[in-house]
Length: 151
Image 1: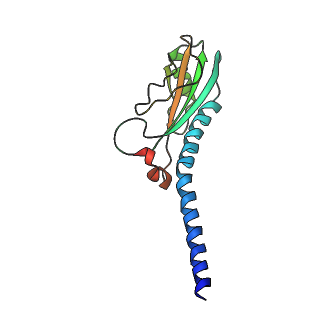
Image 2: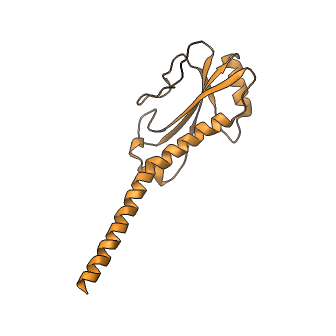
Image 3: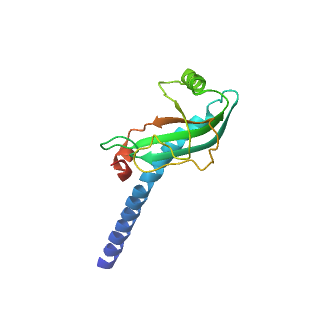
């Protein structure tokens, strides 16, 4: 009888351990998916004429500022014959639901808006007509609070 109870307890503890392990592993995966959705949203926006999308990138973590908090960053590298002012006006005009899209000139692979750590595009940027279109996402919940990258 004691052996049977011991096996049951061991089985329950094993299942509990696996459940906790899966939850811990799912925290950064979930936050990476949220950041990837920000980049996906940006890449699904209609492009203005004379503009092409080159690459998209995303990251979750504490990326700018001080203090604690998870941040979700998505960006798209654009190549365009339009000016920075024209691109800014275009993306300001299509932003919905309080979204804010930022466009800046991109002069190298390094993404300058990221303060903590480094982040860069893979594509070669060899001309003055490259731009970064980026946005910050948000997602309240336990996954944002428990991810150590946000602290």
